[in-house]
Image 1 (tube, rainbow, N blue to C red):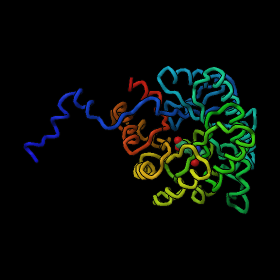
Image 2 (tube, rainbow, N blue to C red):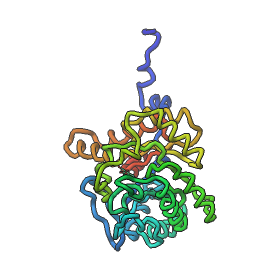
Image 3 (cartoon, protein in one colour):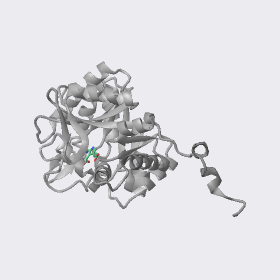
Image 4 (cartoon, helix red, strand yellow):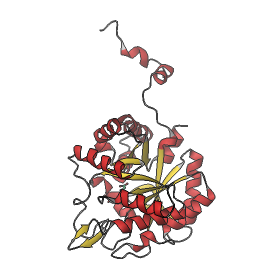
Amino acid sequence: MFPASRPRRLRRTPALRELTRETHLRPEALVYPLFVRHGKGVKTEIASMPGQYHFSPDTIVAEAGAALEDGVRAVLLFGLPDAKDAEGSEAWSDDGAVQVAVRSLKKAFPDLLVITDVCLCEYTSHGHCGVIEKGGVVNDATLPLLARAAVSHARAGADLVAPSDMMDGRVAAIREALDEENFSDTAILSYAAKYASAFYGPFREAAGSTPQFGDRRAYQMDPANVEEAMREIALDIDEGADLVMVKPALAYLDVIRRAKDAFPVPIAAYNVSGEYAMLEAAAARGWLDRERAILETLTSIRRAGASIILTYHAREAARLLR
Ligand code: PBG
């Protein structure tokens, strides 16, 4: 009790504050998402995500090299196809932008961790994450397509594949297909608790993956649910997920904490495009101290229990942490 107890004593100097700090943000925990399209010399800024770009397989190598210099050792790739079709067939093409980029990145930087997003929505003409029948996304017919995409990423050299589609059973289907093709060392980072969120807005503009009809609520999770997230995570771990993700991060910090307390696997959290865009927009108007807001945001995600954070601020945060 006061006056014997004075918590301010431990806040008096930077050294005391650092001595007693509970949460540490490290560049090694950050994953940098990147968008890749076909072509050469492409570096086009994404309107809805200022400071983020579309790259081609050559320029993405330079960007990843710069990220490595900043201290970021892992990237997550999203692909933009030249042509879309009903099945999303470029998702598993060995000549897809992602597959080409993975090969270039692993050749240039063998130690860079390359993670690939496995989904069909960027590749399908209708913008949904699976096969459409009778106006809806059908689950089981989608699984072999996702597995094919994951295998093509592994063949290109991806270290981890990250299914983000939210079909039931996709982790098992992908694990089985990878093992059959002798990719038993390729790990699965599953977007296990992925919510149907408004915060993906800027990404859909960046990836050209807005659904052409309806929305994703019949496969992505209801934002109101947390018990269901525990069930999704448990299923994915049973099916062979090596790491699991909660997405988005900021409106779901409680879900991250529950996952961390319940499951003995590394928990990843995705600080998504809308969270990035909000911070950037406010900072651009001078309403927020940008650098402090970035570090405070990422620290909160760590404090909630995420060991891995996927963030468009990865490079900048790594530089700030030096
Ligand atoms: C693809 C996918 C999405 C994101 C990652 N993978 C969009 C979606 O589900 O609509 C969102 C990433 C972000 O907003 O930063 N299924």
